[in-house]
Length: 161
Length: 261
Image (cartoon, rainbow over all chains, first blue to last red; front, side, top):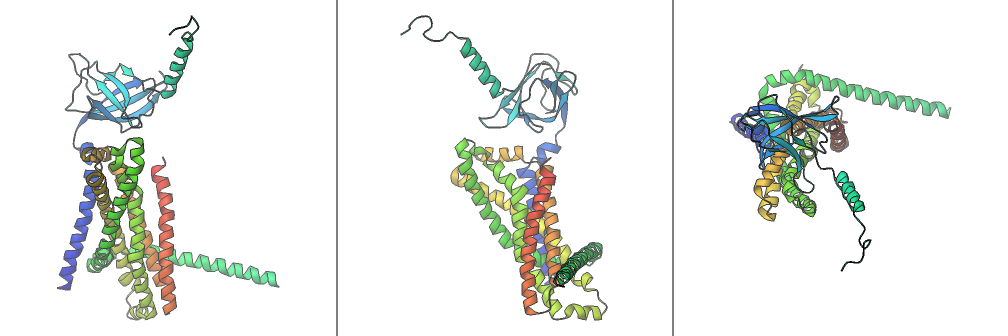
């Protein structure tokens, strides 16, 4: 009697542990989106990827349609070669373009894919030609300073009200 | 003459330390070798899982819940300064799954289950029950220590998973239900940032390593305890201190190996 009672409690304990592991894997991590959908890979080259990381989201109209799979440096063109895995139920025209955007002020960087107008769709192995680099804050500031310096100083050509 | 004495004392201490380490290592490999045999007599292991696991469930669940509550409150306080309170779910889940779950669960387990293991084995040693088993040609390591070892190694990862899951629910209760962070972004930020293998999987590996370390240290301290009431008392203290410290040390080594690359 004691034996079978212990069995029930240990069984319950193990079941609880298994449920907890499943909860961690399914609800808090991304196991479902990871494995049960097929996707196709396309590549794109960027002059500068900023802080983009493998695993970052690829979004279109704000909806996640894929993930960044790999980032490598291309020694011939001196550009960053980014491999994207797009979900196969989402098809995009072959002349779609990519932008690196940031979610929020301090958020993660993600890729935004803007659909083009081509009749043909992207297929696995395609290259996306039109890309826009990440916005680097330092470049932005120096551009702003240069353009400020190029402007005629206020008051140089006479007084204005 | 005095120098010679000091030299001899140093030599004796070194030899003793090496002998202790060697004894521990031999016991460890013996336990590993016997774990298969222990699993075959599953009744013994099951009773230990019941004793070490089920009875620790209450303290693990309650602690996990409150750690989750506190993470929710403190995380929100910091994140809302930067206007990214919706990342609360990610913060709670990552800190629990990667660090706090395995470490805090192992520390609680060392205090709750490890201490009682040491006291049990130490009292068996003091009451000469282990010697009696040997006299009956029953190997006490196989009959007494190996099932407890396997039971602990099975129980702690399950307790850790329960701790992390309950902690995330606690963070949800405070963050979403009490403070009012958006539930959708709470879960979606978490799912976007937590990786099944890199975060959850490595947390489970950590908890298995901690289960091996804490259970083994508890058994070893009980097995080598002096067969007196004071000996058992100091062995129990040492078991908790040594296993807590080694959990923290091992955690640093494992984290450096897993996440630094």
